[in-house]
Each structure stands twice: as structure tokens, then as C-alpha cells.
Image (cartoon, rainbow, N blue to C red; front, side, top):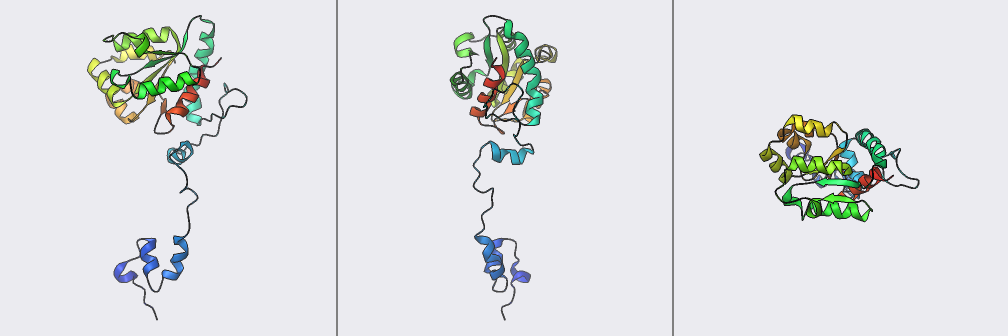
Amino acid sequence: MARCTAPSRGHRTASAAAACPACGSRYRGYNSYTSPYSSLSNNTSSRNFGSGQTRSSRASWSKAGSIVLYTPAEIRTLTPVRENVEKRSSIPDLRDVFLCHAWDDRKGAAKELHDLLESNSVLVWFSEKDVLLGSSLLREIDKGLAKSRIGIVLVTPSFLKRIKGEGIADKELSALLSRDLLIPILHDTTYEELREVSPLLGSRSGLSTLEDSMKDIASKLAELVEI
């Protein structure tokens, strides 16, 4: 009679159990089993299992036929921004979005987001076209918001270095955030890292490429500013 190897070798993995002469027949069937989640790619749906919130809702501002879905947290975050977009819709000559970013990201993540937004017919205030080199970050955010429906801040490791060096005061940043026009977009960093540098900006919910692709984020922003 075959003897179980668990007492001496253990059955810590399915392959170890399958190799056991006594228990192998019971476990070999499991080796051919494929998890229903194993075929999921690193897309929005798979990331939702980790975040605990599924993207199952359309926003109240979504147009008929829209396939863009949001989590409840995203709806809560974006609703006051959308309300301000509607209030500012009568102001002439506004860009749709002001894109604030670190200078080092101008040809990387910032350019990618800019191009994706423009492919969605969004008019973008972008430093490569509109901001002078060496200008004050805070001043440019303020000016960009005045000339745009909303502002987005692309928060990357390079951006964190810049605001840490520039020393943005909580009072100044609070004035910008209180208008519900500014949305942080986190890329290659986390809210924990942002809060270490700017607790106030880190307290504002936004969107993150850890949860959505840059393309999906651009689609959500495009819906947000469409009137």
C-alpha cells in the first residue's frame, strides 16, 4: 500500500501533493483546473478585484450609449467638479482642461495624457504650448484654472520632487482645491507618497493609473468636461 509523504515532505503546494504516491490521484485533477480569473489581463476589471470597488455605474453626465464606467468613489470625487464645469459653461473661450505637470514629464506621461485627451476632442492647456519655462508652478496652476473648465495635476515622482523643492504653502494650495476644479491624476506613485510631500493635495481624491489605464482616465476626463 502506498504511503503518504506528507509527514516527511509536506503537501504545501498542489505539485507536491500530486507527487505523493498516496494522495496524488486526488490532486492531479486540480492541476488541470484553470482559475476563472487567470485569463484576466492587467486591465480595469482585474484591478477592481484588488481595489474592492467595481466599475459598475455610469455617471449622471454620461451621454446615451456611453461605455465608460465608474466606481462609487469616483462618482463622489468627480460630481462636484462636474457641477463647476456646468456653472462655467457660459464663460467664453475656455479650454476644457488645464494639464499641470512636472517639466521632466513633458515628453513622457504628460505628453501621452495630452495626446489621449486631444484624441477625445478635449481642448488642453499644455505647458509645451502655453507655459513659459521657469514659470512658478503655483502661478501657472492658478492661471490655467482661470482659463480652463477644470485643472488636472499629473502627480509623478518628478512632480513630487518639484513641489517639495518649491514648497507650496497649504494656504495657497487650499485656495486652489476649494474651488473643486483640480483633480490629481496619480501615475507611477501612490497617495501615501503624495501625502508625505503635500498632505493637502494628497487628501483630495482623484484618478490613478494603478486602477485605470491612461486611456481610460482620458475617456473619463473627456466625459467630465463635455457639455
